Length: 297
Picture 1 (cartoon, one colour):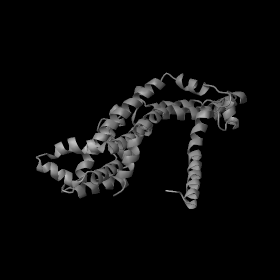
Picture 2 (cartoon, rainbow, N blue to C red; picture 1 turned 90 degrees about the horizontal axis):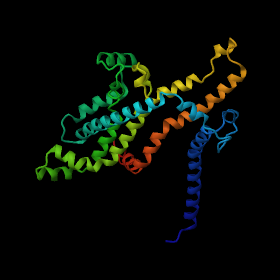
Picture 3 (cartoon, helix red, strand yellow; picture 1 turned 135 degrees about the horizontal axis):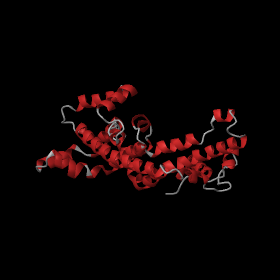
Picture 4 (cartoon, rainbow, N blue to C red; picture 1 turned 180 degrees about the horizontal axis):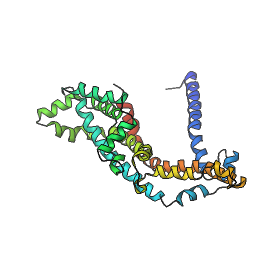
């Protein structure tokens, strides 16, 4: 078909709009990477606009000189892998029965799940609960409390409802297929998209988690990466008391401030690389799973 003049104008305007959106999204990422490789003075003075100025690895050198970084990476990987695996299993096992219209307790259980999205006990009751369960200062405290997200259960349940037709279940039952066999051999293979989506959601949450570690963990050998990065950032801030007592010169203060600004960008890159490396492999499932799983409530 020959494009009309109005179609060409529409495509041109649409391409310009999408290009502007691309620049808006892409520029902050390029800026952060450039700042992380630039000289601290250039970052502080605002000389960095697009490409690194006076390239240096000082920020990354400062980070990886900390002997705890490898421990943090190992712990975060452990929490992320174990937590994501457990969370995906629990989410799928909870969502599938709730998607079945022949399940009598579907609505009461869903009401209880939804209630927890709006009301919670708060920090102190949660801490007392973790203490009574004996989870304080254990690796399990980083995995078990966040092992089920009601939002992800709702999305997964909706995916099952909109993707797996009831006729398929009825046909399998006529052939003598049990509910567990249908779930294992039919429902799960058809749900790779939503499993990839919720796995990404859980993995990002576990990888970026630091508040739970700050509250519940006391042993440094169990700290996740985020806590060690936080310590590095705090250690390089300016001590106002030391400055007022003359223990730090103006030059030292300026150097410390410049390094602090550089570390902010370097820490973002160090903490984001694992997630950025994983995302391209599940992007095709991510788009499909989010769109299908959010069509109906």
